[in-house]
Each structure stands twice: as C-alpha cells, then as structure tokens.
Image (cartoon, rainbow over all chains, first blue to last red; front, top):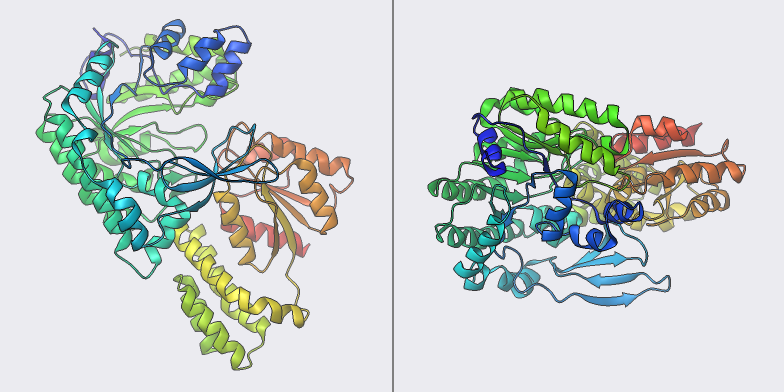
Length: 374
Length: 211
C-alpha cells in the first residue's frame, strides 16, 4: 500500500496496512539547531525549510516521515501582480518599515526572527480598494495555466503522498491584506458593504482559478484552504459575521470540487476553531487541520462527537512533546492511537516543528506512529 | 444622565464620530470631565470588556469601541489634567525582547485604558531592563509582558529576574500573557498573574493597582 493510498483510505474509513507518518514541516530555526547539533548539514537545514522541496523530502527520509500534508498544486490565488516590496523608512534603531507584497506596512528589526508587527495598511477605503486592489484581484489566464498546473502536478507525483489543490482563502488572505485592525474597522465604518465587496471580488477570482485548475482533468486527492482566522480565545471575528461574509463562497467552491469528484476538502486554521466549524462543515469543508493541541488547546474529539463521522482530521499531535522526553512522546502516540481508532483521522504534529524539538524524539515518533494498530 | 448613557451606548457599538460629538456636547453643557469619563466612556468600555470576556462580542467590536473611546478621551485629556484628575493606576506594557507581534498587547492596553488605568506603552521588542527601568522611573505598579512565540516567552522570566536584581520585585506586580503562555507557565517562572483574555487582564491590573 502506498502512503497516498493509506492517507486517502484513512480519511474514507477504509482499511490500511499501517498508519502513515505525516508531518507539517519545520521552522527554519529548528533546522539550524539540528545542523549545529550535527544531525544534518547546514546546507540541508537551509534547503529543507521549503515545503515540497527535494531537500525536505531527503530530510523526511532520514527522519522516517512518509509525507507532509503540503503536497499541493498552487494556482496563483493572491494579489496579481503583488505589490512591489520596498523599504519605506529606516528608523534610528535600525528597524525598517517595509511595504509588503500584500500592501501592508510591517516593521522589521535586524536580527529578530519573529512574526512582524503590522504598522499600517493601504486598504482603508473604497477608493483604495478600487484603484489599488481590485485590479490585482482579477482573474487572468496566467493564474492557472493548464501547463503550469500540469507541470506542478507532475512534480508532486514524484512523492508518494496525496496530491492536493490549493483552493484559496475566503477571509484569511483579506485579513492579511487589511490587518486585523483594518478588517475590524471595515466591518463598522460608514461604507458597510465594502468588506463584503472585497471578500466577494477576491473569492470570485479564486473560484475561477480553482475551476480552471480542475478543468485540466488531473486527479486531485483533496482541496486545501488556508484561513488562520482564529486565536487563543476563538475566532478573530464573530461566527455570525464570518458566516455572513464567507459561507456562500465556501459552498460555491466546494460544490465545484464535488462536481469534479473531490470529497476531501481540508482547511488549515490555527487557533481555537470550534465556533467556525459549523460554517465550514455545513458548506462542504470536512477535514480539520492542524488541530492545534499544544499551544492553543484545541481538540478533535469534541468535533467528532458533535458532527459525527462526516468530520475528519489531520493533525492533533502536540508537537511540544518533542521538546520534552520519550515518555511525553509515548503519551501522544497513545492519544493518537485512540483518535485513529475513531476512523477518519490521520495523526500529524499540530504545526511546524519548533526550535528545541529533539531530533531523536522526532525520529522515534515517526517510527512508532507507524506501529499503531489499525 | 441621558447624555452620558448615550455616550456609553454609542461607544459600545463603535460609533466614534458620534461619541466625539456627544462628549463635546457634554463638555459644553457643563458636565464635569470626570463624570463624562467615568459614567460615559469607561462605563461603556467596561460593558465591552465584560461582553468580550463572555464571548458575546469579538476582537473587531473591541477595537472599534476602543477607537471611539480614544476619540472621546482626546477631548477630555486636557480638561482632566487641568482639574488634577488622576488615573486609577499606572502600568507599563510591551512585547518581550525578540517578539514584534503586538496585536494581543494592544488589545490588553485598550482594555486597561478602558478601566481608567494610565498605560505606558513600551511597544515591541522590549528588553527586561527597559521594563524594569520604566517601572521605577514612572512609578508603575504593574509590568505587563506579552509574547506570541514559544521562542520568546522565556524572556518573561528575565523580566522577573531583572525586577529582583533592581530590588523592586516586592513593589511591582508582573503580569504575563500571549498565545503560548499559561497559568502553569506563570507559576513556573514566578510571575504574579496570567489571564486568559485581555478583559480579565485589565480587571487584574485594576485590582493590583488598588492594593
């Protein structure tokens, strides 16, 4: 049985010979740590950070992973062309204000590897939307050329892993473009329709990209959204507002996937996601990923109890165990075994492996997770 | 008073321009700035905080309410200063060294200001020494440290050690918060308080300042 078959069988409640060892990827700082500790070369550390790269696949083999949940084909789903990244200002302490490709001004400090601080943003009103952003949110042929999609697909075929089609982000990208603060203000400013207009324009473009990619006739195993619209306490906006803005777009896009025979539709959202699950599941999303147990305290079992077997999961393994000891990893493997026994679930660390993760514990997990009885 | 109730209600739904105009009207009608602040702006923000704590409203509603409060506060600030009205306490806040992500920190700051506290915002990437030095120089009763990343949260312990080294550990409360932080971690490093959300953090800071 191949890894691709194992994954798809698990998500369809079918028999498998063993559980696949699936992971989410690595933070760059961890790979540098591993290189400094002598586990891998610095060259590998630099190359393996990129998802889907041959170097990452090489590292995966050394560790014992079967695949990632990132083996996806990417149409051009973002702003096109992106904003030209430029330094707007260098401050006395050496930090820089930079206009990013998404039209957001972020603050960077030399020597600090961190999620940057959003300082300002361009999309503040309808004029900015229509003049600066709407032209970049239009569908064009270059976003999903058949030859590009096919070339990417053939590259993905080299790995024994399910092949996904990236199908966009209904609100996460808009949040990135407007910042959390900007998105919040847009919800309540005088031009009440503006945020919905932005979401609609962007979603329509992404729908056409997905449609064009599907028309190639290639067999994708799953569709994959990215949202990241939740945090420690739950969603970044009210579930009602989220539903109002996004539900119809999920439905339309997921109906299209169903027409093309794709019945596994996963969605990547960090944070505590419970309150948004109804919108997702009612509109065709059925795989929760990565179910962040360690940092955010998310869980899979309550969703399964609530929604039954129609809800599936990839993730849920507390990656912080890799900073601990073998007993902590064993506890996670035991917990994963219970979730696997529910069916429709693939264990996977609940985010990228972080600095401090011990190489030998990751190897140990990758080996032991395959021994879970199914 | 009807006008103050209107200020509170409009603040709660984020109507910044209306709040500003109502505050101006209240001042013109001779209502004391302290009453406008306490019974109008802070009363409204207090309800926002409670609703946020109870998951009745979300981040966007808090942000627009805070924006409305700021617009009203700008009018009152010089008047309150002229009358010698003081804040209910003073705290300093920042993200710890190496951490540039400040959404959570800003949310806590807004909630604290909504409780009538004076907040010294040290911004992002703040060293342990700066937290402590600011607390000493500005007589802050509380130091609030925020971290988003598991890689930077350990810096919070440095702030506690720096406060001990400076001899102010018994004079200042140290609060911590952020995505990877927990009650367990708070106890482990010897901080005074961890709260699960921004509104609870503001309540805790008010309580510390009242001690």
